Amino acid sequence: MILVGPLLKRWILPDLPLPRFLDVLAITVCFSFALVRFSCLMNGCCTGPECDAIYCLSYEPGSQVWYVQLQQGLLDHSSHTSNPVFPLHALFMAASLGVGVFLMWFDTKRSFNGQIGLLFLILHDGAKAILESFRVPYVGELQLTSFSISAAGLVALIIVLYYRRVNSA
Image (cartoon, rainbow, N blue to C red; front, side):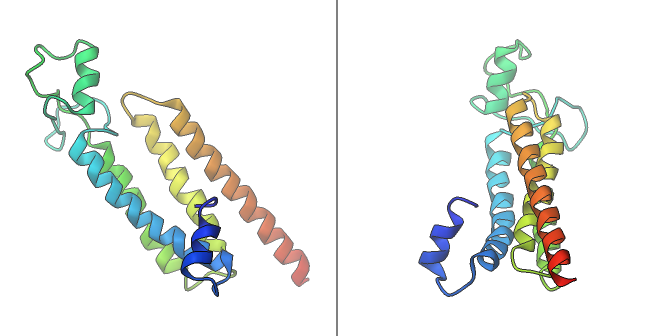
């Protein structure tokens, strides 16, 4: 978003200030990520641990979770479906939708252009960093990246709010 945003802005809405464009892009990206998580649901990636609850899902041979379970020797035969797993992608989807709805609501209350974009980095990637803890197989780099982006957004928001307060006094 940060790297491609300025290029998209010049191409799509050249008259809109860049921070405001990033606000609009942030909200759009939330809902786009929710759609991407639907493909995770269909492909069997981004899943959680094995579970036996009614909401847990099994996947057909050839899915990512099936390959992981087959490699770990958790399946009796390669023609069997995967063992039921927690649908972590549904939580990722809910987090993206929730952050998107919140940002749409907060957009009317923002105090400066770019605030929504920074809140997106904090909230969306913060939620992702928490949810990455439950991914099986665990990928520490994904969690560290999400946490770092969220922390950088928080630092940037604090700096902007500090300078706005100093300049208004």
